[in-house]
Image 1 (cartoon, rainbow, N blue to C red):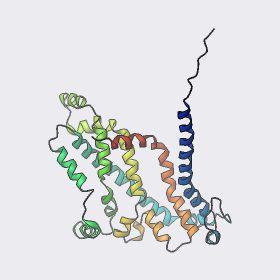
Image 2 (image 1 turned 135 degrees about the horizontal axis):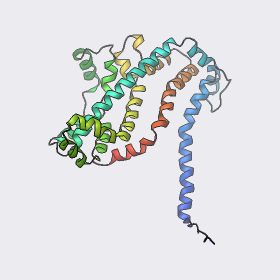
Image 3 (image 1 turned 135 degrees about the vertical axis):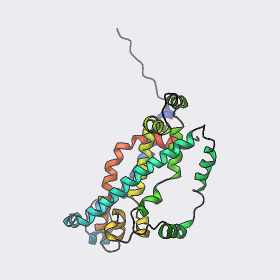
Image 4 (image 1 turned 120 degrees about the horizontal axis):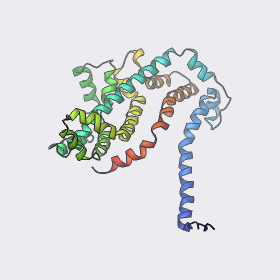
Length: 282
């Protein structure tokens, strides 16, 4: 006869911790989810109903007119959507390349000035020239008025993301790099063919952060973009808030969130690893 396997008894302290922990996390999740549900509900409600009773978890005076108004003449929305996609893809890909290259360099222990350069990058997070100086610099010296580069360059490199990727790059065995050098590989070959594949989870985490930054950015477009056909989607939504009804704005907000909601499930597994490893001192 096969002996019965006794199940290990869970201590009461662990049992009650799991119960209260699960309830607390569930309560926080409900608080975070409620505004999102109210936004969706408001997008299917009439403006008059929202003005009378506010947004609710369930639609008030259900209607599809808000979405019909968006997609009846979708040219403006689709063009702004294409601008946002272009800016997001260009900024994310170029930003990932620059950030990963910098992170790899400052993670190399044989690089003499890595601590000085790391401190220099960190210093820029504490002090900056301010909005006025930045605006004058971009317009007068860079000549980026009404240019797509004006909404790509400001978010191109982020020190926090650089530090996250630096800690990822520090995990690459130095013996692997030395072995590649012995075989005649150059620095760019080592970086592109050996290091980058090992940074895949870190690149996914930082890439999503960068993409969200570009996708949600309307402030730089407000400062530097003056031609309407160059407006990104978020800035178009910002301008719509002043001219359209509250329910129409809610519907437009739901439309702008759709790509992010579609992308997030594919990279969410990299979040915990990227954030925790990036928090470790390298």
